[in-house]
Image 1 (cartoon, rainbow, N blue to C red):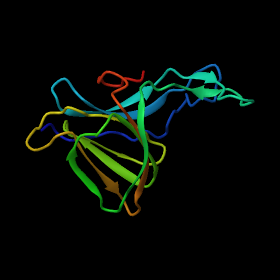
Image 2 (cartoon, helix red, strand yellow):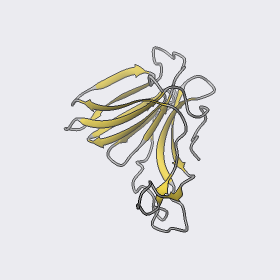
Image 3 (tube, one colour):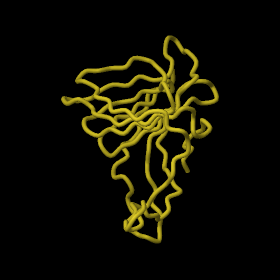
Image 4 (cartoon, rainbow, N blue to C red):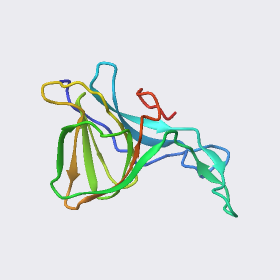
Length: 168
């Protein structure tokens, strides 16, 4: 297994490009876990682009919005209790995971680890990984003294090809 590395947190979210300037679309950072060409999970720090000023309808003023392709299968709320660890497993579906309260971690087969809390987002796309010494997919778990509350949006199939940073 490669040497472990820890990714820097996403905050500050968008220094210098956070959507305050109507002439410059924002760039949104996110973590992406995916199955690389060698069949093992990888974890990268990425940025999402493609935002446009649009109204959500009615009399609402335009705001920065970006569509996300794919057919949503489920929207779930999860609570990871203190001490919870999900040993090596794949994401059941391609999914966005957004921590709402508390903290959690991800560790991929390439040895990368990241901790996330409110304001961080993650796209999990580590399906069809190969087993490497009893490790398949990723590990995840709760961090700290309070449970981690998450919003999860799962897709029926992967909305984009599994490549590093697909939402640019």
